[in-house]
Image 1 (tube, one colour):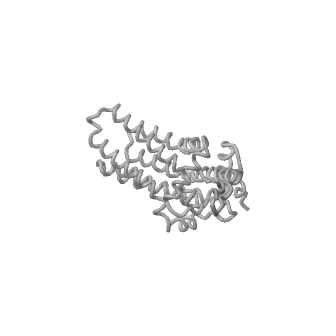
Image 2 (tube, rainbow, N blue to C red; image 1 turned 135 degrees about the vertical axis):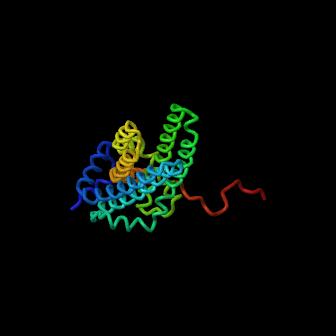
Image 3 (cartoon, rainbow, N blue to C red; image 1 turned 90 degrees about the horizontal axis):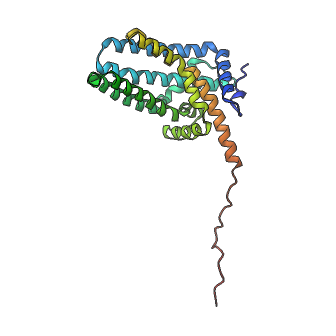
Length: 268
């Protein structure tokens, strides 16, 4: 019997969230492992193929393709985690079938980010040589920071869709409000989940980011999506509970009367 369903409710310290997430992943390691492996392998294969083409357009396509695969992997892992939270079997195949009819909704905000990165990387590949190394490196760092800021406000977007929010617009609004309420644990969660990718990226940078090293970075980035899904699912549940508590504690204003408001008596 799964024991992490009840842990997704109530208030906990940020460190406890990571402990609960790791415990949940270990408890059903085979399902989350296959989700991360399949997504990571698809991202790695696509990256290697595009890098072997060695053209500005192919290199620019890497970011949107990997982001799309990562978004679907995150959605699948989040759906599996939601099933586990209800003491159901978090089967990876069933989770993928459950999110597939709404795959477009899961991809909406991330495709926007991917298109922006495609345009930026394409221009850098065309004109980066004229800018020089440090200018190109600065622009690349700005792209990474901008992408993280964009993703940070949408940290609970996937969780909101899995929880039953109907439209992408509503999911984005819910995510933005709950991310502000959750506070510091959200960026910390992104940092912890990104540590393996950052480590692989540094190794790939030292190796020159050839097809193999770039593929490994993509594999690690997408393969860690189940960890990010577990942490964000717990933070989403905690922030939702806090929002409900605040709403219940907020005094409601008395309803206005429907008749004519009282005023001074008219003179005869």
